[in-house]
Amino acid sequence: MIKVNQDDYAYAVGLIRAKEIKLLDSDRLNRMIEAPNAADAFKVLTEAEYGYGNTENFYSFEQALAEEMKKTYALLAEIAPVSEVVEAFKRKYDYFNVKVLLKAEFSGQETPQILTDTGIFGIEQIKRIIRERDYNELSPIMIQAINDTYDTFSRMRDPQAVDLIMDNASYAQFVNDLNEFDSPFLHELARIIIDITNIKMYIRARNMNKSWDFIGKLLLKGGELSEEFYFTEFDKSVEAFVDDLRQTRYGDTVKRGWELYTEKKNISGLEKLLDDFLMRYIRQSKLITMGVEPFIAYLFAKETEIRNVRIIMTGKINRLNDDLIRERLRLGYV
Amino acid sequence: MLEQILTGQFLAYIGAAFAFLVAGFGSSKGVGIAGQTGAGVLSEDPSKFGSVMLLEALASTQAIYGFVIAFLIIGKVNEAMALQEGLRLLAAGLPMGVVGLVSAIYQGKVASSGIQMIAKHPESVGSAITLALMVEMFAILALIVSILMIG
Image 1 (spheres, chains in turn purple, red):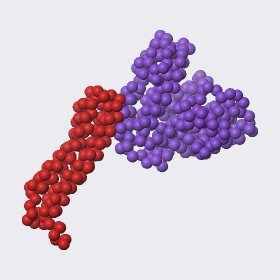
Image 2: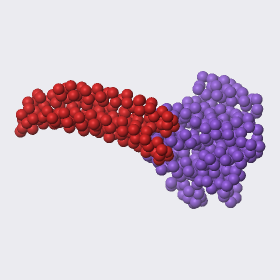
Image 3: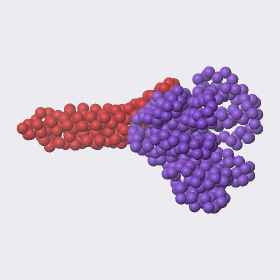
Image 4: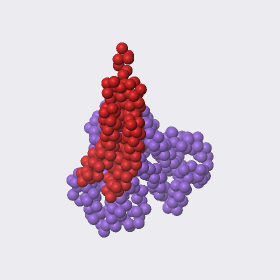
């Protein structure tokens, strides 16, 4: 358990509050959406001092986003009283890298150029760890995931299984890290993330007609909804599952998402609604003036912002309708 | 031996030391918290220095009150004072010390929150100061009680 000494966060919280006013609010996101073309939309980002300013035109907006993420992590690592706060967030980039490396190894291809150096381990370091199978520095959850991946792949030869195992482990790691902090707010956050991830996975898996064996293995433990709940639901239809969620706090959200799904045959609407549910919880930390919560909330805020910017820029480049872009946007922190 | 140390004079000095030490500790902590938050805001937006400094300084008054009480007590001390008289002055130092400690820390926290507020809404510096000043009232009451006890 990492003790949270609230007063240690006094400096960080002050800086974060001053940074929060620079987050892209709905006004600025709207300006991006309503811009006549991608180049004009990109100008809003340049004004917001996105990235390190190395990006010349909107085609390389991904580079600006990656730089912005790196910049955020560099800043927060500098002001964090304990490094674990930032590491909890950085680990998912390690999982991403390991996933890419393992898939390349299984398919016998060269390592693709998409590795990111935002994680805890540098690119060369993680390459060496996977190549030499030297797992000493890795966390137990990651070692377990890597072993599972080797094992599953040798049996099933299915590269999709690599994605599933590593993504799942990445979430398990994140909620595990959040639970390490002595903070009821973060424990509740972990529970919500577990439930949301499980609900998304469950509905998706049921739609693909997967077996209980498959679902049971991917369910994250420790949420408000137990494994038994999903197990009993497995005998019923997905509609009944949505209906049974009614008594939980996810009831309305999942119901609306399911209606969207039956309308459009696309699960992304449901996923967006669940992400917004999580953001509504995180928004509560605006009222917490001292401690680790505003810190964690800022990272969420920035990640959601970057995600929204990506949705807008991709939409603009592909000349999507404004409303279509707006529909996909996640609820922001500000 | 003990009678030589436990004189009225000695007890009165303890009262003076308590009032200043404890209230001063509270102020240091309160101003410290507010100052750290202030530094965080200023590192991003140096133009807010004026209002940040004002809010940061609010929690320092408890130490000043503690100083006043210590000063008044020391003024009453003389070598020949009775044990009872010394004890009375010791007791007089307690309200300022204890209330000063607690109110300074909490005032520092309110000031820190206020600094976070003006980071977002610079125009609300007035409300931020008013909120922090609410806590000041308790320190002032303690000051009055201590002064009345010194007599």
